[in-house]
Length: 396
Image (cartoon, rainbow, N blue to C red; front, side, top):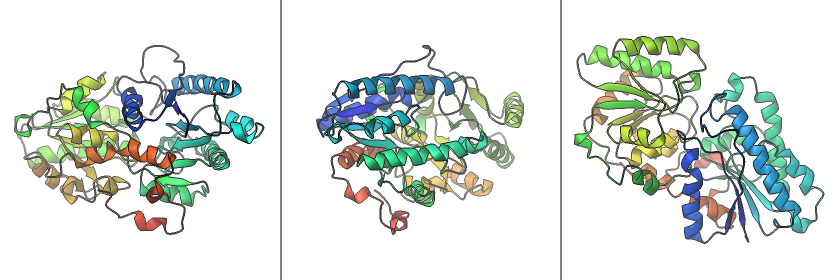
């Protein structure tokens, strides 16, 4: 590889995209990768999600298309060759079809290898594309991306073994690798709390929910757990909180009515309009980050909490057993309130003996990506028919 053209995501103050380029850059620099960070334009400087869920609908489209325009200009000028790699941080890149149009018409010497990272897409039955009726055209888009990637001798990068299985079931026939995690940097996160990770016994007895307050994240189950906790432990003094980078909202109005009712009753604390450092300071003074998502492919909230010395409690569902190396002490039986409460009781008392292992593993994800691009990641290739054998492997 001569150069790596990095197609990053637009920055949002309260989301991991704020740090994603920096997390990658630290590894690229250490590995001696000559990276070109292709810029895009933003609609405004608010860095907030106004329309949409994961990223702002207008902002993602505007940034992605303007970024691709800059890449096309570099290609037209002869800067990008077949010795280079173009790496897309997200498989959904508005304007991606233009690459197929161009690459089918230029000489082979001007066709870079293309790698894309898949974050969810229509292969996930609980992804928001199904909620909003986008799955049909998104599925066609995904097949187009796979076709273009395959023609360039590139690959799709999955984040876990279950995602690989879903890709296979959907008929994706391009090269697929499991990078087993999201890009992360423990060092960068700890720097945001001045490298002062609070001792566990000095933390508030606080449980934090930090996923989106949308139906695929099941906030209703979290509120059921809160209600059951207070019935089991009246007057315990444990604070249950939800953290949001914007004014709290949901794609299910019934959740918000119940949420405000629990807030008024003093059962739920809402922290809104948080920037990343605000959120990290809350987690750094909490004991458990709780999750009950139907749809979460190796959540960054796991790594962030683990890096900041906060316990995590997630369902033994989807990709989480792989992420947690099958650690039963930090996973509960999916949708069992009783098991969630039993595990929560223990995790509020003392730190996990495996604290730090998840964040250490995900801090190596960018290295695994570089290895794959440089042709040294064969152990992560999932092209054979026995790809299912990897599902229950502990990666660390």
